[in-house]
Length: 512
Image (cartoon, helix red, strand yellow):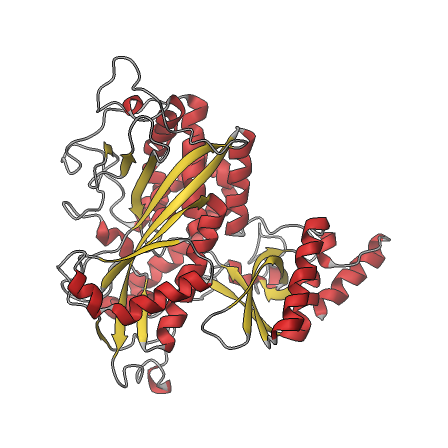
């Protein structure tokens, strides 16, 4: 393969003996070798025919290449070539940088003229896909051909944040509550989506759909029974993939549902979210359903979907929850953070509040997502925290001597890139810990007119992000610049669209 040839040439030029691209990247140790050997044996014994090498893009969507199984094991050592412009695409697959023009990729070494990057798979991530016959799946990250990591890979950005958290003595656990919509595709409902006469960029045309339940009957057992077939598909798919699914629930809106996952370490939680969204969409589509993680699907009388991120810091050695406390701090009331949270927990909470407006662009990265921030809609509007308050942006859950004490951030939309969402929490929380910030009293009026408001539009959120020195330093000013440029391309195309409703149907409903 081309990537193998490149690694061999590079080895000869540097005078070094290289057995694989993974070794050039400094990854091939005894643990990885054991995982590679086990996966190679599984491939031989299982009758697999294809293996998907999957990589998560800026928008939280999986891309990659599918290899025949006979070449997969070697590719896990030598990498798989991928055009670098996939790191520079906006939400409609348009490249935000003119990489084929002189200086069009200025400041982006390695991206000129659409040069290759290499996807290197983690062999330990291999698993068969339950909905695709004789097809396996591995998770990849991107590297430059000289063995240097691509710094804008969003999974790597989370790994960097977690390293900084670990250097401060903390680990992180996250639990996921993911709201989304499932629709039944009508007979002939893909006619326009697959009709070449309706093909356009972005595509595809949205399918014609009907509801799986009529809504406005929260947690209804009747509606759950009505939606059992697609919900069973979600359940069986998630469990077959080893995802820590806890429950499936009927949400308030028509055709709206929720999946709740047990807490895991932060990187695994992000990986699980990426895989769950992709897997649910694919498995449901094969059965005639359309799942969408778009915040507000393009229909009247719809309810917005959120992604609530539960988070706590833990001791790296013991796993003990470092947000929990045994007794309330002296002189505190229920409105004080240290009545429920440890001192470290209060600092972390205050950091989330201090950077709440900046993190909005990562937690709610689509134009559509800002339509969710409405009063009395179980969605936040303001930079506030509350004790078990579902109207506040940050909901503190737990009590003294409660090992499950945690902070729930309710700002996110289900389309968010999980690596950026969680990394933004870490960097904000670390800033609070470093500066020992104090949290204001909890709110009992989350929709009060006097409170500081979250951004109400994506352009505003991006402006706040650009102005946040802590985030620019933590993520890197180059990445903030790239992220902003890619999202500005999305904003510009929306502003220029003659039919903005159709734009959202194609851009978001048909794809996300």
